[in-house]
Length: 277
Image 1 (cartoon, rainbow, N blue to C red):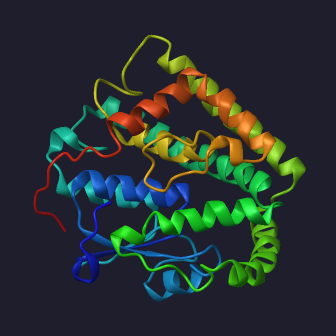
Image 2: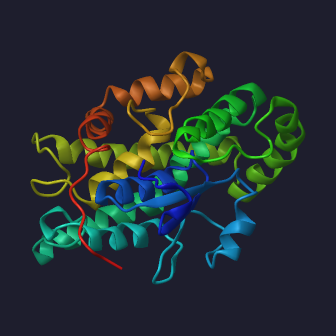
């Protein structure tokens, strides 16, 4: 994680285990952009986000030039800090750039909400597992100077969690029928990516890493628990049986292996830094 503490010129407001926040974090880390991460629980993030000039959702990136409240906008902003040959969107012929943009948008619109709903559906019923996931995500950031939230202790979490669980379920429409529809959307996206990878290509578009690759890997991560993710997942054996089975099955597919490879080879790769906004 790129973090220079209180003096960092950028501030990234997150829910640390959010896959949309990971998408933004990855782009900033890759570009070498120094930022301070302000991490919050779900629900507790809304007021800081609004106060910063964003919406009720995260990630929100506060920059010298203004506020960005969408993960795709943050990816585009990060491109200003890297050489054009390493940009996530630009530096490509028009047709290839359009393909990258279309894939990134599909993953953002379909895969992201679907993986979130499926993961929450399995995690929310069990307070102990939820604490392991949420608490572990903050512990992983402590070394980077991110202070634990007020609920970091087990007792405070027990008071917070029942209310948060009800609100999250209602806000995200998390129930058995919704989870089943979302699994269908995950299946459709994975099938499309499996087909795209059938010819042995190293990346989804062209011969280099792009926004399409980053978005797919980050937004699929909750259902793959890849190694080298900066916010570690619990071992699959500690997860609910339904979620563990899904992770194990998806890891065996070409798209799942692709995500694991990207986390090994690309997640902590920096491509240089140049002056930008």
